Length: 309
Image (cartoon, rainbow, N blue to C red; front, side):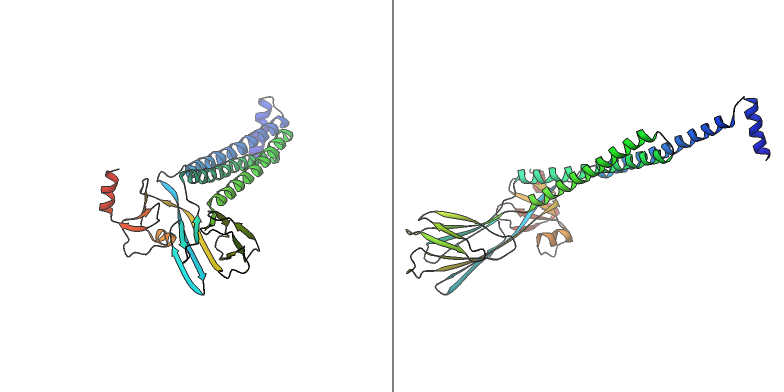
């Protein structure tokens, strides 16, 4: 009671009313809440900027391939497999040449994937800022601030958050599409007769002129079956081809990239991703860009190679 009486006495001395005191208290409360929200927003912004700063270690996207071709000719079966971006196989009579061709990962493709990933990341940053603004506007509405102005800010921030999240999702989807490598089977007709190719899985048919070739799109990670014959129904020279191609494209930290090779630091994750086996746990894996052949390079050898670049 003494405190209350003291407040009343001061109001009388200053010629102030209870209404004036209540308005001042409300203003101070608004300022405190807005200040707290601003502090939270600033802290969140700093954290976002810290985690959004790209890591300085050089990274790139490295593919892994796995190709299989099986040719059945005159009751005999022949097969080939490799880990390169293409695999070529010829029939025993030399009339058919088959090439399983996977998409080569170029610098332009890697650049486009990184751009899409960066766009997705910065869209998430924008969504975080918009979400913080949305929360601040909502606090202003609840605290009795100018509700019309606060409501407009809230609606704008909410719409910006939704748009940013949608943009991030679109960019992520674009990056995943770019990471899905194309796969084709190229069949060349080396004979002097027209050739008939039947896709036994999808029911498609192609006619190939003499000394010409056809490029057939394949389904990734699925074995595809083709029948090759002459257009003459009396010709019994029929061949069957089974083709299977798989690929992955993942990001790795590289110690060095040259025009012909990647040098990737050895780790359990890298060995599993590249499907490479070695007992060494130090050094680098050298990957030939043309053949995708892999070998182990010691740290001392790597230092010499890097100094000569």
